[in-house]
Image 1 (cartoon, rainbow, N blue to C red):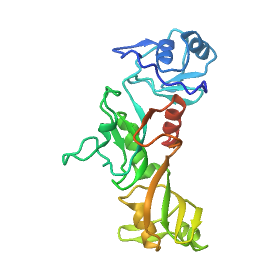
Image 2 (image 1 turned 180 degrees about the horizontal axis):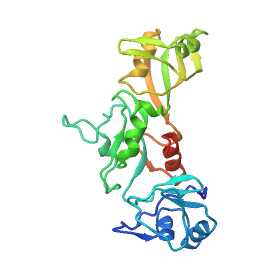
Image 3 (image 1 turned 90 degrees about the horizontal axis):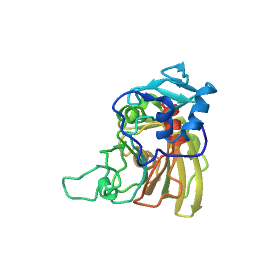
Length: 256
C-alpha cells in the first residue's frame, strides 16, 4: 500500500451499491484513480481473497479489500480517531451526571456517531481510540487478541532493581494474576519515579492496582500506545484521524 499516510477525503462518497474498484480505492485515500488502476493492473489488490482485475466492481460496505497485503477500510462511513483524553474527563461519550465527557471534545467535527475503544478512569489520561467500526473495536478490546497497551506512570520511589523481574513473573491480584510484558524505569528522583510498562489486558484499574500491590502507588498515569497506535505529540483534548497505514496496522494487530 502507498506509504503516504493519506486519510480518506472528507468529501468521500457514501456508497449505495457496487462501484468500480479504482473509484473505491481512490475515495479511501490510496491515491488517484490512475494510480489505483495501476495497483490493480500490477495484481497488488485483492478483494475477498481474490486477486482483483481492472473492471471489477465491489460493494465497499461488505468487501474485504487488501492492498499489498494490508487491509483497507474502504467503507467511507467508518471513522477511526485517536484522542488524548485529559485528566478529569470520564470515558463515556455523554455523562448523565453532567461531567465532562469525550463527546464534549468532538464538537461538530465528526458527523458519525463514534464509540470509545476501552476505557481510562477519570484520573488517568492519554490515548483513546474512537470508532464506529464495531467489529474492529470488539477485537481490540477482547483479551483473546492480546493487543498490547503501554502506560507511563509516576509512582512512589525508589524502584528496586528486581521490580521488572517480579512484574514479568506475575503478580496475584484479587481477581487473578497479571503479567507485565515489558517494564523499564524512565526516570528516578528519590521519592518519585517514572516507569513505563506494557501489558495485554484491560481489567478495571489494572495498572493502578498492580503497581499499588507491589508497593508503588500511582500518582499519574498516561496511556501512550494501543497496539501500533501511539499518542505521540497529540495535545490533551485533541483528536486526529488515523491514517490508512495506521488503520491497516490495527487490522493486522487483531489478525485480519
